[in-house]
Image (cartoon, rainbow, N blue to C red; front, side, top):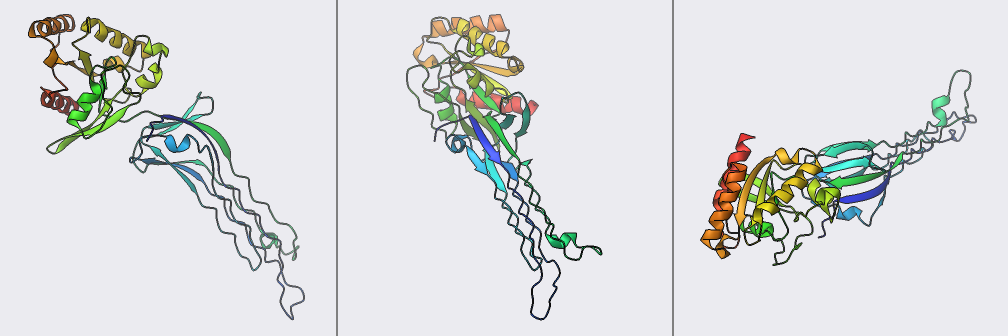
Length: 329
């Protein structure tokens, strides 16, 4: 299934049913009174969080959604049935905006969380409603109210406890595959991952959600490549694992480039707890690894973790550190 994190849809609540114009007609009763029933209410439009969804794909090509109209009233004081509500399931973490994205209307964060967005039109009154002591045979009735309509934009920001960030081809997908049951595409070239993947890390009775954020590049915060799209998925992560490719010529400079993009993007992403993981240590000689580690620890005044996503070296320690940090949140 393709990962779609943005969608534009038109939605409309149901119209209310018209009230009925009817009079009682029975044998031997020459002047029966008014007995027109009321129209039914139109269906509402409701957004609902669904933890089983992780993409907005269903709205990519199905962009028009309408709730059911209420039925009209009938004689014998019969009220029309109400229109069926339209329930739009969306992934948890989805934001709902107006058409030009200037106003965030709501965001769904929890499974089964509901947001009544457009109310259906009220049903019209039948002529029986207008009977009075001075008007015994009213011919007045109401039409049902029109439903509401709107065009909205949906924007999904994944909900994950921990996010993997770093340059393209740093090994993030390999880490995700090793420690979870996710199956991200892995290959030895940049931009293998074109959209986020998520997986669940389980250790005894503890668990957390890990997200593989596509590789960032310089000027990503300016929108270069898919920068804004990628960076937006980091906003809700509590911890970042910065994966550094030790086979590159200048690992620390690459790290600084990504840090700069996090700062420039805003949303205080750069203030999140960070674990620095030096990857691909199985194919780099010990002397080079020692120099890289020394450069990081000297400039950042924090310990870094040596790992290998290919062999699993110290990935258990990496997940333990994530759990430790999450418990401190």
